[in-house]
Amino acid sequence: MFGKRHGGTRLALLPSSDCSESITIDEDLLTAIIEDNQTEQEKIRRNPWMSLLKSRTLMLRFGVCCWCWVAVSFVYYGLSINAVALAGDRHTNFALNMAMEIVASLLVMMALERFGRKRSIFAAFLVCGVACIIPYFVSHNGTGLGMFFAGKLAITFAFNSLYVFTAELFPTDTRSSALGAASLVGRLGSVLAPQTPLL
Image (cartoon, rainbow, N blue to C red):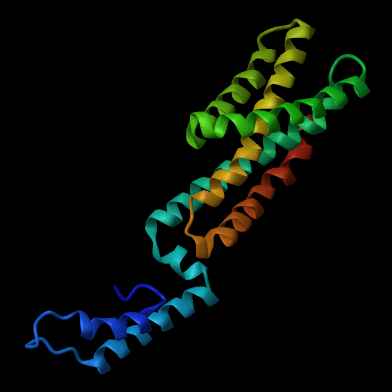
């Protein structure tokens, strides 16, 4: 009851809501409770990481999000860098690579609401992983090229979806901080991506 910010209003309403005159409410006690609650809320507002660090569930979510961000950044930028190394005209391949991003962005708008966040992101990671592995077992250039673009489509879908999903996993007071921190950690994948041509 005192977890809301309008504790002062509740204080004024409480005495009049008592049906029995034998119940007495100490207004000093109520005021102290409200002030303590406001102090706690102010601390969280000043340092939103406090509520995140105090919750094991939120920390676990944050760790999983960071891992997903590292993976998606590594694969996304790795495929983007290697687009010019594909068989055929490099300019055409790069244009097709960018076209996959447009298609993926359109798919995100339709798929997230229809299939849900978790299923959509899981499916995107799975499709991308399979598409990146198949060319090692198939020597046909057309198949390898098709799998490359399928992988780029899937990983772009996952990248765009993570922005939405990560923000929705955390409370309002820590949402922007958690999203920014997960994205920052994910840039480790971006740092490693230029090394993919050496693999």
